Image 1 (cartoon, each protein chain N blue to C red):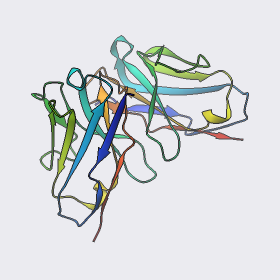
Image 2 (image 1 turned 90 degrees about the horizontal axis):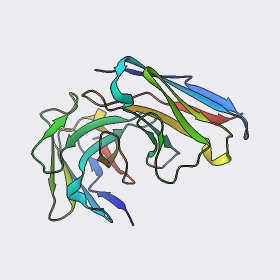
Image 3 (image 1 turned 135 degrees about the vertical axis):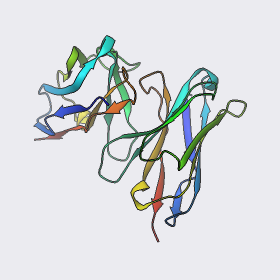
Length: 116
Length: 108
């Protein structure tokens, strides 16, 4: 079964850090670019960060540039998002997805809540 | 940045009716690089359409996409109960990739 499974979300204080993981199964992970998309409560979709299939090219939304780092380990079929200097407006459900321009396979999401 | 504007914000229809959703881009989306997604409450988005008019695997033919340039349309020919959801368009012809703000299709 084709699947992406996120983990690592939780409650964190403002200024804190968190690392999200996304494990792929059922397809050749190393063939796909990957992205992280977030959705704040009651809001739409925001593309946060992307990485190419080899891990050599990354990009970030202005809202997270300098605070988030995307990476991947193709030997472990895993995508990561290291988040630091977290703010209240980073509170959202974070999804990972495959990227071929459009986003074909999505994980179920992991909740990140930034609050004191 | 390409801004995608979806209309209407909310569409109130009955099961069996036809739904027409619009996505307008602030600049031309080259080669029809536009996708549509469906999201139900508490679930991840699901790819419906890519390349403006190509249905993703497993998507019924009641869903169709059309358009080019700056104007795109998602049509659901006969609404089933499970089709009531929020729909997003997304362009991938320019960086950064962007989403529209969504159209909610609700039961009238």
